[in-house]
Image 1 (spheres, rainbow, N blue to C red):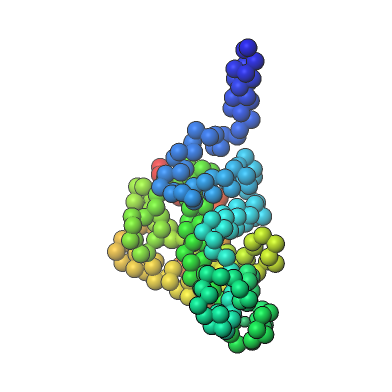
Image 2 (image 1 turned 180 degrees about the vertical axis):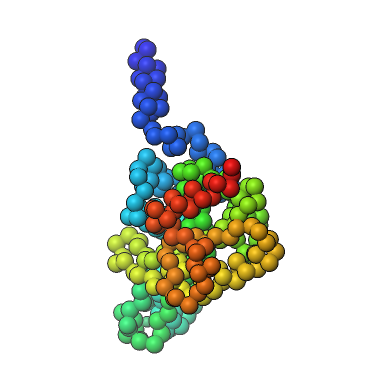
Length: 266
Ligand SMILES: [Zn+2]
């Protein structure tokens, strides 16, 4: 009769002994603050699976961030797909029926497998939703990681803040997040590479730069940082701007960044 209670007591003791400091479950509510569902389940689950109790490496950090973003796309059914508009037009009035209409997942083919048309195939505009959803996946993954790993005192910016995504609770720094996927992967579809991810897209870097300038006009003296999963490629930017950019998939750079942010709490 005492078997179950005894066993769970032993389990609790083993868990307390084997979990490394900083990764204990009772800290989870703090790391989770302000992270809504489904993001919390996704980022906490991936943290546990990929990073918890492990030394950070570039491969693991990439895996964590990519998995968080891919899982968000999966949750919201933001799949890359295409459809043949000629087929749709020919079957007008049959909306909702599959019929003989050319469509599919992944990159669009050169010609429609049904009507053989070559100029009637279009990507479905899910890429519009993708930018927003992967951005949110990246932000929540970053927030959870920084709090869980380093106990950083940061929160999401108030709604409608344009220039930055996170604020230090003591008001000493702000962080803008610019992360996105380098590839898409879903089910048995072949991997689809997405060029210009993160800050490698020059428009994204320009936006981050203007956010920083606007922010420093409004809040002079408050530090501003930009986090991304892909560093900028262009060299035509000031050292002052590039010095504020942190690659979250570089374990040494990320740890140095976290240590620096911790100094603002002292
Ligand atoms: Zn067709």
